[in-house]
Length: 404
Image 1 (spheres, rainbow, N blue to C red):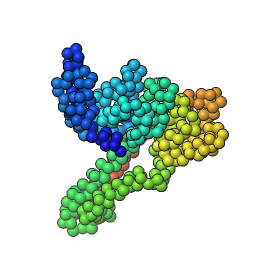
Image 2 (image 1 turned 135 degrees about the vertical axis):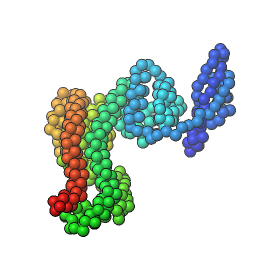
Image 3 (image 1 turned 60 degrees about the vertical axis):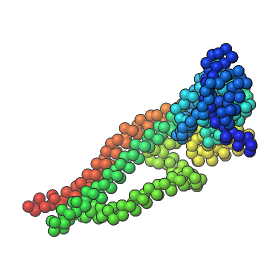
């Protein structure tokens, strides 16, 4: 507790001064106060001329792509021979997000005090998951940290790339539906009532489609607050339940795999992430049973997380990985065959990596195909929706023209 309190009261100070040779030097130090900084510098043979506490800016949320970028930068610098602490300092200074800079400074401080890099990362599980920490620990133990950081960077870049493609494929139709709802709401609340006043002056019976649209408009005008509030609140509580409730997550994950058009895309992306994760862990020298601990969660789907738990239990009792995956019943034949070849030839990580490459390419092709497929569907949807409203409101005018 005392250590935590001490760490919480430290600040970052920027300083300038002259060393024993009279050369101008500058840097930054984490300390509890200005006097402590000056004392530390004098012990190091530096005569401080200026000490100023750095004003910490509020940064944005740290995203997985920020961690992927940091991992790539750290791997590159370590391959170039830059010492670990200096690499942390360079990456932290060069990052545009103050939150990432603070996180890296905190990790660096832990490493400076003698903590291993993997142990320092484990203190921040929100940003460095078990897979990340296990690979770093394996790299430290084998003395190949820079190689495993490079492998980890490749893994994170590929998985983030898949997530980005899935989001882009889903975002287009969702955004169109949202815009269509807003446009229809504006028409119902502001435009249709003006037509209603004109039609009232006709004193004639209106066609059924026109009466339906006017009735819908009256409902929008009377209960717009209930429609928008109920829809917004319903979506908010639904996504909160999806995030927090395990049963809702399982239901939605199963549903996502069964969707008519997007289900196959989600399925292939999950397979790509599953095989890529296991390939990366196994190639790093992590034992198979231990590697399976991280694979299920990394797949991003509770169906495969549950299946991975069953596979782990079977493998730990002596069943081959291929047989356990076959028993799970959620993997395609191609992955099972490549896994069997990998086990027989002793190149399981290579074969799983090839399977991941194949399914990542499949995801790329499907996203490109869906983009071209969705455009005409969306045009027909919007045309039918807006066109139906327009025709319904002009039917009485056409009817009046026919009478005249």
